[in-house]
Image (cartoon, rainbow, N blue to C red; front, side):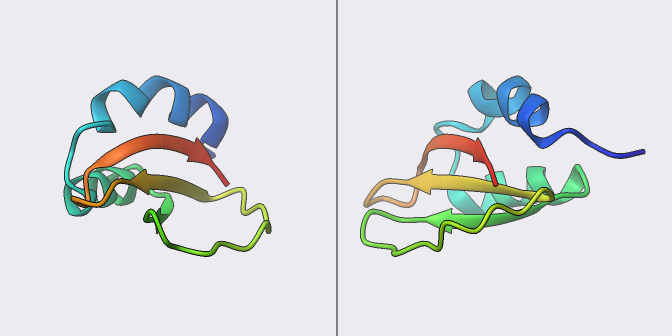
Length: 69
């Protein structure tokens, strides 16, 4: 079964925001998706990956946003 990451991100965003990044990464992995962490000073490529969720974190490594790609 293929997971639509846009739908997955929208449906799980509220549950992931506020979690430590490690816990959020585990939730993403449990869904069969890849994740990447975008910290406050992290430079990211603009490459879109259909199997990846980007977790934006604050200075305390707490997830503040969830988006596909």
